[in-house]
Image 1 (tube, rainbow, N blue to C red):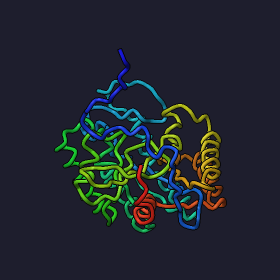
Image 2: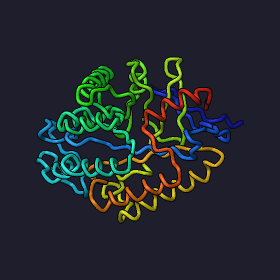
Image 3: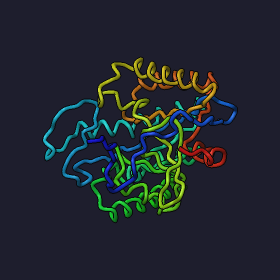
Image 4: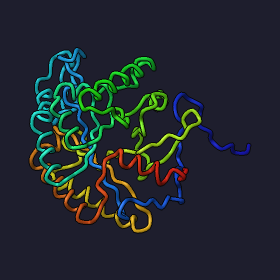
Amino acid sequence: MAYTPFEMKKVPGPERDLVGYGRNIPRAKWPGDARVAVNIIVNYEEGSEMSHPAGDGRNDGLGEVIYTMDPAKRDLATESVFEYGSRAGIWRLERLFSRNKVPATFFACAVALEQNREVGHWIREAGLDVCCHGWRWEEVFNLTREQEAEHMRWAIESITQTTGSRPEGWYCRYGPSVNTRELVVEEGGFFYDSDAYNDDLPYYTKVHGKDHLVLPYSFTYNDGKFGLLPSYGSPADFLDNLKRGFDLLWEEGATHPKMMSIGLHPRLIGQASRAQALEEFIKYAQDKGAWMCRRIDLAKWWHEHHAGFAV
């Protein structure tokens, strides 16, 4: 019997794309002819994570160490790890970004900003941008379509109040539901979403027959590997990973400029030794001539200059 090529099944949600740009990588052009666009991202989640005080009946497991605790018991240790991020870590980042003039992006949960409104004041004063990280730091794939749409509306209204501006991008915790991208497009006020990890460049996909911009995120250049996903033994490992990634992207950028998304969490990178490594990398990238940008800058630049690129 002749072999019949394998076909993916039709299932709810976006179709998979395993080809992308392929060999025909676009020759993107960044401002100042930079070879690499670097976007520093602060995942601000503290106070919106799962906890007993929030009424969840369970704890969030992403603290500094991995251990098992009866979810019926309140985990004061993990709660305090998250509190470090909003009490101390975020302000260490504020000082670091201010002295190095870093135009960072916040992946912010609405409820987290409600719990510490001074952070929203800083975002507004510094001209930083917000990509909405949900109403809470929740698993949207466990919500109905109607619930997810409602939480999206709550998030937009809340962030608009706490920062003075509506969020212009969207990014879920871990992964989106099969409805998320359609809801983002139907809402009508978002320039892009970052619910993908599949490329080194932005790209357009079709939603309801319309072009929708995706700015892929990265778990590779992410401080989540401190303690949570064991990988970084020390801040030097984090710095080495960032530098090595940047150097190859810089080399490739001589002909095909790329983007680099660096994900941070105040409760993790906000610790002094780690913040020092981050600052060293920022200075390194700045000295090389990287385009240090907000995520909304990337999205708008792509819309204005590269809308014709198609995967």
